Structures are given as structure tokens and as C-alpha cells.
Length: 327
Image (tube, rainbow, N blue to C red; front, side):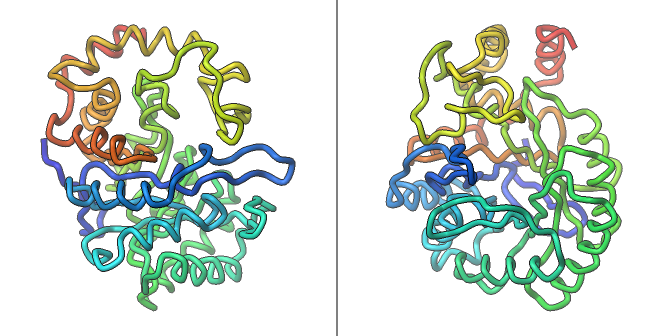
């Protein structure tokens, strides 16, 4: 398998595997106390994990200004340090938050706020440009999105960003951004349990990179979750919001775990771990796929990066997965 990808039509090269930096932001919450992070983190371990990923060939890191209310960007910026030029950094904006209380307070998709948010992200990441700047509001108004697309082109001309994307699961919305010259990608949900055929088709048709969030189904595809197993209080999965499938208040949904078990033999072929098999499915699913699994430790970074050398599943294995899941 080719271990490099190009971000859409931009010519920006990235590793076929990216790392998602939501978890390393640590704990943060909504205004009503709903946890929005993945629980407590050790910043020093996060820094070591980012640097280990770099050593193992990962050159794409995806974060957002709101992860840990600014904390993820700060940790990533510190971890990259002098190696900033070796990597492609993606971040997102559109949510409003209070850094002091680590609380999400609202949303703002105005062009005025976009510029303020970009300036703040550059400062936290300790960089003079962002490689891929993404709108984080998945259901923003398409008319507003057209306005923001023009603003992004302005940011490109000013040298503040190199390319842009929308984090959305709606192909029609993604297509609005795709009309811009420097639109490089769409970030969308996709994993072996939750296929996204329309979005993969759109990326192929419009020559966009397909950045896959939740490639391990929020941890269900690592094989570590058991039915009825409680999660720590600061973990978003302990009180799953409506959009978070596969979990209930008592832990992982047993029906989802049964599907994971059914796929185990196919995904662990070739000496892969279950998680590596889940990443291999995405690479087999689309040559434009760039999965961005999360991580909180050096061990997780090593395991995720280890998927690169094992490559994609075969066409036969792809068909076998569809047969098992009856789709």
C-alpha cells in the first residue's frame, strides 16, 4: 500500500494515517456539565506520543480549537516544536468556549469570528500558518458556508492557511466548500461499522481527501470495551450525547460489540490488532481515506502507527466484511 496521500487537489502530501488530537485535550464540558473530553490526560505522555508518532512516519495531526478548550492545540504545538515544518497541521473552529473553565459556551460562524479564531489557534499552536483549516459546525447554513469559503480563499492569499475543509457528514454541504480552489478535503465519520458510501463517492468525484473521524468507532474497534464496563466520569462516552452511537449510559452497546466480535477474524488477519484491521478496512475502502484515530499514550501511538506497514485489506476481505454485516 502507498503510505502517502495527497490532500485533494492541493498537492499537500500527508501520511496515509493521521492522528486525531481530541483526547489529548483532556477534560472539558458543555455548559450543562456534559463531559466533552475523554477523561484525564498526562500532558508529558501526550507530548512523547506525538513525537513517537513522528518518528514512526505519521505527518498529519488533526485538532480543534475547542478540544480541551484550547489545551489540545497548546500541547500539539509544544510537542511539534522545531519539527513543525515536517508535518501537516489541521485544526477546526466555529465553537465558542471559555479557556478558564474549560467550558463550551456556544457557536459562531461569522466571518469576523473566523478571523479571531484563526489568530487564536495560530498563537496556541505556536505557528505562523495552519495547513488545513476546517469548519467544525457540521450543520452550518450552506449560504453562510459559501461566504466562509470566499473568506478562506482570502486567508490562503494572506498566507495564514494553505487549504481548508468542512467537518460534516452531509455530502451536499461538503460540495459547497468543494467549489473553492483551495478546498482540499472533507472530514467525516467513517469506520467499518459505519460506512459512508455517499461521502466516499463525493470525495472520489470532486478529488477531495476523505479524512475519517471515529475510525475506531470511539474505541469499540480496539477490542478493549466490554458490555457493562463503566467509563470514567470525565469521559464523553460515560454520558453519551445523542449523536454518539454504540454507547449507552451503562457502557458499550452489546449489539455493537457483537458486530465487532463477528468481524474479528477478518480484521485481525495478517498479524494485525483489531484496531489496525479497522484502519486497514478504511484504506481498502477508498484510496483517498486518511483515518485519524485518537491516542493518549505512546503505546497507543505505536499501535496505531503500526497499521501503516501492514497496509490495506484485500478486495476479498472488504467483500467478506460486507457479507458479515449484511450490507
